[in-house]
Length: 413
Image (tube, rainbow, N blue to C red; front, side):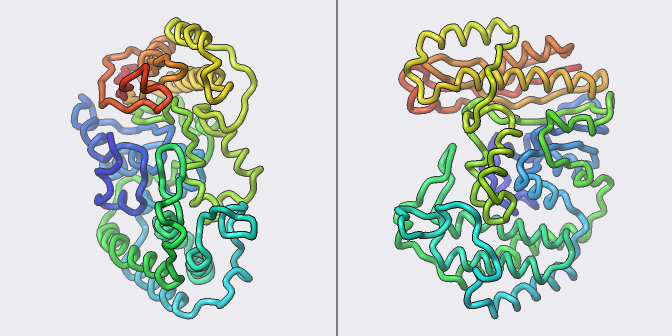
């Protein structure tokens, strides 16, 4: 259940994704199915593990991703039109461009939006030292001006994305980005940033492009990987066509993935204002409290109502007053999804739904059991709930709740 296993795997290693599962999870599912699936659905694509591995097995997969960065990453990994000669041509051209960069790159490439990107007069902390961000802007400018093929432009953009955190003063720390120890004096010059990027291209990417250039896939899932909120876009999937769903939706842990991948969204100019950022957060599954929603009435589920009743006695001990509303909204979204799944799936299809339980106000929310209830209310049959592993609770909950269960719900239609 950990993406870390993918860090040295063909194509998946292009970008160090934190969340998600490994390719072995997909392979194990395919090996245990009593039928050969022909068309799958991945409503929360993330870094693209599901559609990429299904494509490798010749299985068509509709997929959806609301984050413009994750969508770009997925479609680049799904691309199979790259060849060694064209790749080498663009690497050489970009290398030459980086050998003679503009002295003041900020006159031709704008800084990412936000007050904390670079040091300012009033700054206590900042995301990038000046030489590091200038090196990144050099690379972004080279990609934009030298590469005239969109497939390769996107490929090189993902190579740039893969070094952004390395070049920054930040690291990914659970739910957010935190500052590295000693970041104030850990300064890369522009040439070092260029070399991070070129080394990735000439090693990992070059090796995988050689393999891709010899392939001839039978399906191209990049063509049916949609950018946008699956709740609004699932109509792209024909009714009754899906016989397999494999997914891991955002967990009910108040984690906002736009925060975790904020540097990539900003540096790659996929988000350029606070208004765009707010709009993106509004379109994500309601599993966090970064934006407010209208008051939600809880769905008709006994387990959920029992949890909410117990929590209501402890609401003074919370770090955010919107948590109960977030929990109600999360399960309302789940009910909507399973209702939609029942229209898109054919009889005999199977769903593998990876979730984790949560805890708030000292109360454990049995997310897997509640989702199982929701699935059965929509006409599905829950075959089993498999425990995948134990997860640590947050420090606020650890004194009352030891560990939380991560599960895979296996559901038949």
